[in-house]
Length: 104
Figure 1 (spheres, rainbow, N blue to C red):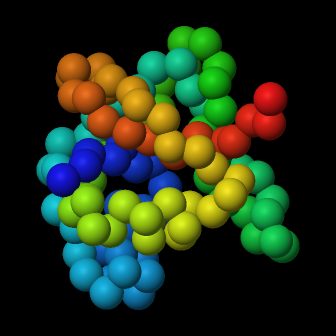
Figure 2: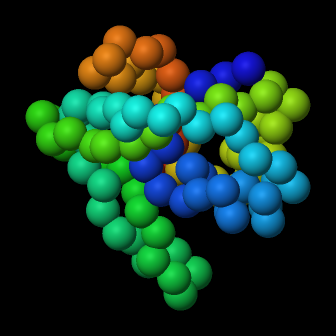
Figure 3: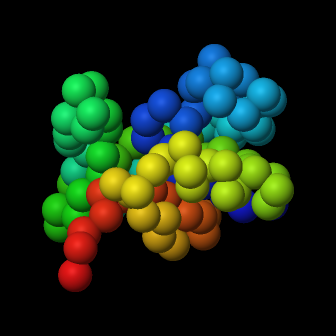
């Protein structure tokens, strides 16, 4: 099981069901990540929320528990514009989060 800090569509139950055929456990309490901004970026004619490094800004989100067998599908759903990184929430939970991929 992997914990994903989600700030966008991934914690939407309708999206989970339509994209993955199931619902994932989403923790009831909101949590926060420091040092990122969430901006809207146009991709393929639509706007999507993307986290970018910023310094001290807080991002609100939810912790989603994803079975390991779904991780590859989640990565594919997020797409090549995102990368998954390890983060620690303000409530001290180690998890992963998708941010805007930065080509180096």
